[in-house]
Length: 259
Image (cartoon, rainbow, N blue to C red):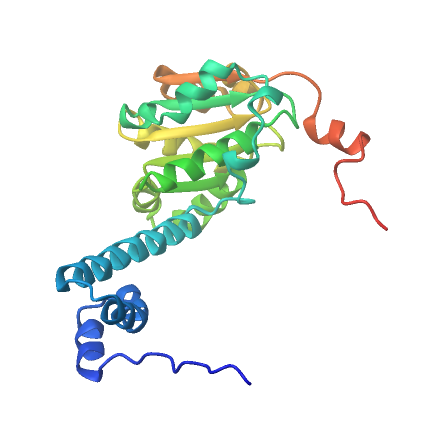
């Protein structure tokens, strides 16, 4: 005997129209099946309403999280789910303290500096993902991105406006300072960002150099002014050791083995 397939429940047109008008897409998607279940199990009306509203709230939260993630511009999507605290040279108590995100509420900064491959970008990205999951906004840049913005907006004198727009984020990350030579535009962009954010927003920076050495990368006057504001309310973490990427590559863990 062939199995009988139940017809998918259909939402009454009037109810569907009302839910569309109220912009409740998540509850609307669940409603047909939920109403059928409620009828079969003799739910109280209040239970049905509560279940629909709960689904709508959860769905909106998922959508907003996805929107914030996309707007942040994270480079790879890494989170603390794949982070190994024991493999990092950042002290465990410091990692734990930063993950509370209390420093963002205090408008403090984070600077992670050290050799290439020691987990600086990974940690900052995972931290940024956690900020987004906490309902806040993140903006991710490489230093050269700031240079591009300066060049694009200097001609119409809108640099101040674009910096203000960036600082709508609760956390601004500038990644990989010191990896490449710093052009004049990028140096100016970093200074303008740090200056505008001072005591108003949190900035997180990863760098191959300690900020005290930024005058090797950019004009001394700009470097001094930038570092002064960046470090005044900053948690500075210095990484050390061999490159994690190189160690994994040498151990054959950088690729999936071929059959």
